[in-house]
Image (cartoon, rainbow, N blue to C red; front, side, top):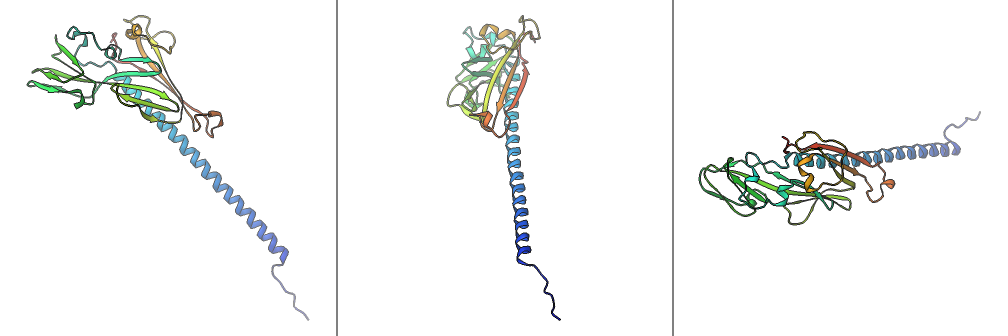
Length: 252
């Protein structure tokens, strides 16, 4: 009596190999899809971090705009106040300019000379907080009892797909964030300089005469992984809006 042989035949072997190949391909496709999703998630998170950094920096600078401490710049030595100091927040030619006070606390016990470069500032302001104040872009000598205020100038602009900043009105603009589709600034004004709140809509322009009525600034930012053609990007265009109320205004 002959014994019947058992095991895999050629057909079973081919079917097993085909099933294994299909399973391997499906697993690879799943892994590749997960990898792409992870990369897109990381890219989206990076865009949000860039927006958070820029918006936070702008909010800090805008809140500090026009800060003079106890010194009144209008008590200057009879000279016309430099235009940027008369307009601590301005917007011309697509450039947002902000003049802020640096966190410097200096009171002279004896005659002492300081220069703006010591503090990374453009202007130095010194006075006794009562009836005397001096403003200069050069070295300044403090008298005993004088307080010192260091002011810097910041300029923000969009250049192609980047938002850039320049310090103290000289040198090159430096890039803060990239992949920018749109960077827009608007301003809310009070109907009268003595009123605390803004009325009406935000406007895209700000003239020198409107400076005393300026109450808040709205910044709009749009980012994309393909800023040249956002519709072709793999991520939806991410849009961010922030409103910052100014603190150092004539009504306060």
